[in-house]
Length: 90
Picture (cartoon, rainbow, N blue to C red):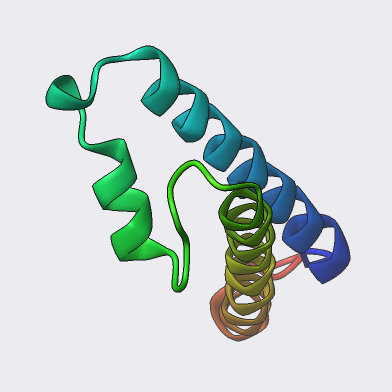
């Protein structure tokens, strides 16, 4: 059985860290080589490239997407593990 708090926090921090890396990549690499701003604006609602408010909103949305993914994953995993998981002595 997986702990939903551990998995959801881990995925939330992972997605927030990934968001920061994507923004840094978008700042370092020329626009014509990546299109990172277009991608992030399409994936994150109300995100605006290169504004402090947009960055903070994108960071929060990324974290919350990770938390949501962790909670849903743990629910499915634990359900399937209870139903079809290998039982001791069997």
